[in-house]
Length: 311
Ligand code: RIB
Ligand code: CA
Image (tube, rainbow, N blue to C red):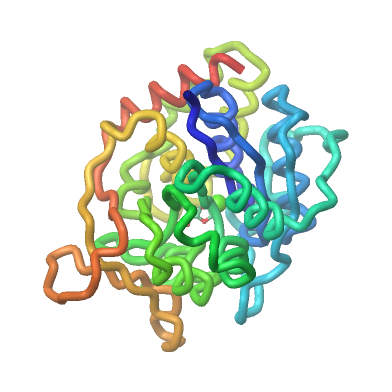
């Protein structure tokens, strides 16, 4: 039986590759995709979700628009990484599939209340605003969530937006605090593991070598997306963040981590959005997250190629 998921996302080239991986994997049933403001404003992220679904040949997937800004702080975006459309690279056509009328937060609440409890996994690829809003709107959903698998945070790798904070958590630290404090099983993919999944020239070429429309578009997404991080980190390729969330559901054996306590800084401007990860267990705080620290990078890219090659 396939695993039911909702993808919450702020595309973003890496988000788009994660969506393609999910839509190319029959083990997963994508109940819906909810857009949030993050890499670029909401008006673009919900368009980019639909562009990606149509690229995958899946105009049937219900797409919803959610939060237009974080819970408390002003929206911070990342056009400097993702380009002005948020999906620069392949030049995908404007979508013709509709955006759902229903507000994304209401879709998340309604779905979790309607599906049997502990059968729906939330895959969160951007700021946690929509998920926090759903929990606040209807706390009864909290014990019904099977697992929250998210890309965000960092420990030994520090931050990518400030010295202390990774982008998704930095944009909405209050939402992250709400989610990490809710008691739902969380599996997190921080910079500590995503920085080991580099889009090297050789790996990007393999997508081009697929010789398919989706393979070529994926190579073009990665070519554009990696240029900022290559210059920043001086590496061959940049870290590929969000597809790890989906790969975890398909092949958890690719990853290593440990259950630890993770708290979110939402008070100090200096360390706003920092994930304070107790990796060495020096406190007695509750172990609220499975913190992934290592991966089989070649196995990850082989999985991506295999599944995207089917689209
Ligand atoms: O810090 C990386 C994260 O921020 C990724 O999810 C990327 O898409 C951006 O949202
Ligand atoms: Ca993202």
